[in-house]
Image (tube, rainbow, N blue to C red; front, side, top):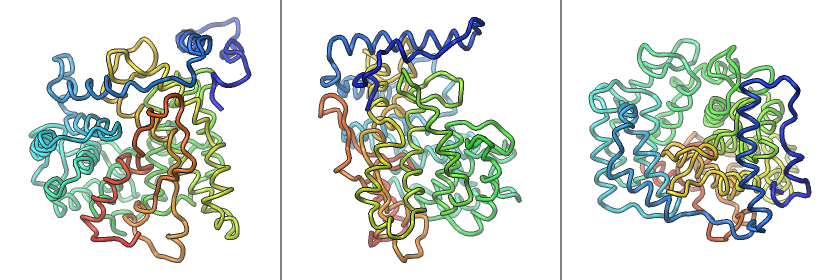
Length: 432
């Protein structure tokens, strides 16, 4: 439905506060006011049908970043594979073809990050890290060439994955590092794309992630920790990779996730009682394609046959407000100088540019799991990743029709065609 096209006055959507303001409640009110001013201007001027994605300025912002970053970003020295992924993915999802020069530079950069003992570090000479490895593999998937794929030393990578594995099924982020549900997702996502998922690798992991789900439905970084949008995505996506989502309380998780979409802003917060943030457009928004597939999978057989028609259409339109999320991204999260932002009055950065665009893609496209092709087959994780497709009949594009960007994979957050190319390279031609 959206916020601006709704019948309620914007003033009615502010969070109710009491007479005892706190620092948190003041920050919430300030954020709502900044979004309200932008939304009111758009509604008063009747701009809802002409809102534009400033594609050209965002592409320029990213390409300028690839030429070199300002010195104050030296703190990201250990995030080189992330920077490569965020920027190359943003160009790809925006529909800007990667030049041969960018492809060559991307491969050259990531080559220097791979360690002889397996995995990728955040920078040359730095220890391998699960998150850096996930980002490196996603960057190579986005580049999408044989040279990029063949850069990966799969034997040492697998052996390094096993070094991260704990007896209880969890993974540490690096050797000697912290246990974190991100580790399970980063390892399993990268292993899926490179055909390295084995029973040895996944033993006990689903049961451990189950213990990370809280009483409210969200998933924390480890058992007993508060649920969080990013951790919940990692946990749910890892369970989907393993085909173990039935271990989770899905109705409770759905209730928790839907409660995080803000009533005035239209974007998502990462935890209850926190501020809206553009990055959660994906970390929370990206939960819904997975939840839809899980819920459809759990329907009686006669209803599953309708999964690409009435059932799917109903679920796709009702789990979250796709128009409202697009309003927040397009009206409140576009920097005039290019790039996307956390919330109004903030500066753009490549992290938020990537995940705002991922969220925009998720809200525009209806990416569904092809149950018909999966029927009766014993599928590995690679095959299951191939069974996601863009249902073009249920796209919703707010504003200018040219705002449509490319579709992203709901598990790996790489453009759908690039996931297929990488999987077919490492698994061989698949009949899906």
